[in-house]
Amino acid sequence: MRIHKSTSVFLFLTLTMVLTAALVGCAQAPQSAEDERENAVTQEAQEAQEAQQPSSTISDEVPQSQGAPAIDSRAAEFEVDPARTQWTFEAPQTKTVYLTFDDGPSANTQPVLDILDQYGIKATFFVTGINPDYLSMISECYRRGHTIGMHTYSHDYEQVYASVDAYWQDLGQIADVVRQQIGYVPCFIRFPGGSSNTISANYTLGIMSELAQEVVNEGYQYYDWDASCGDGAVHTADELVEATKADTAYGYQSIVFLMHDGAEKQTTVEALPRIIEYFQSEGYTFAPIDRSTCVPHHGIGN
Image (tube, rainbow, N blue to C red; front, side, top):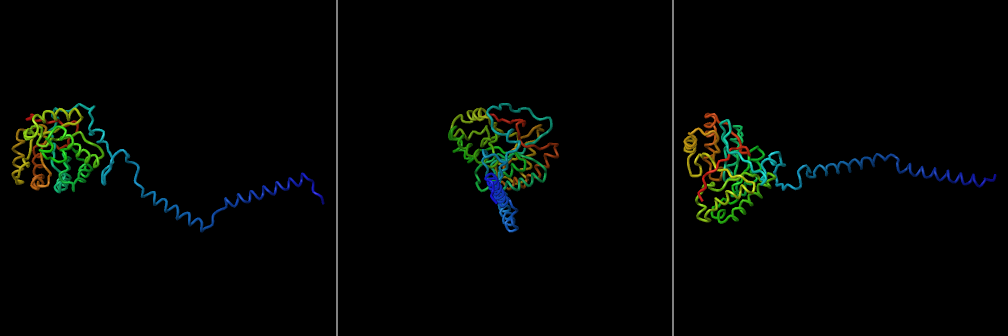
């Protein structure tokens, strides 16, 4: 039987379509059980690898050290900012004491933190780089809700007060450390010896008068203190408690209180619970320094 030419073309096209569909069907056919198991293993490996990748929730612009927390709401409020020029110089309505610790972190910082936790108290730490092995304690203080301020890196009077530029260089060093630990540079600083120190005159005449104005112009605020336990010198824990009572017997409404958590201040740690209980018995509440804290300034002696 002869096949018409058009019919032959039709049969050829039909056969081509069937073969094409069959090939496509092979590509889309269900995988074998063995293939499915291999794909499942590959998928699990990929998911495990992705789980080990660092989180992208922390901004890449923020230098992070091991253990450093992500920036929290305190960053926007406490970060140094030359545009913010309003500070508080009026005492709060309630009796408030601001415990401040200078010269740390050190081996004594951890026990100080534990005591503060025991009493539910937040404080302020004006930190240095004197004890490099303990710099990670800066982030630990911050993580526990305490305020971080800067006290220069070296706390070496001859080095810090050699010139105005020398002071800024030393402050910049501790600023870099603090940024690595908490994610930003805070506006709170304390001069070694306080703004009233006269030792600086041995190195640069008039430097405190100049620095006191410059730091404020740059967006910082320096905090001296209203009272102290006297632990800048060597004393027993009993003597520190008695000195606290004597130095706060005038009934201040607001007290920025000076203490130290440096390497040689074990008696401060011993006295701290009794100092806290003394302030509690006098009706004081406790708070960390923030921008609303009444700023204490001493009379500048150089």
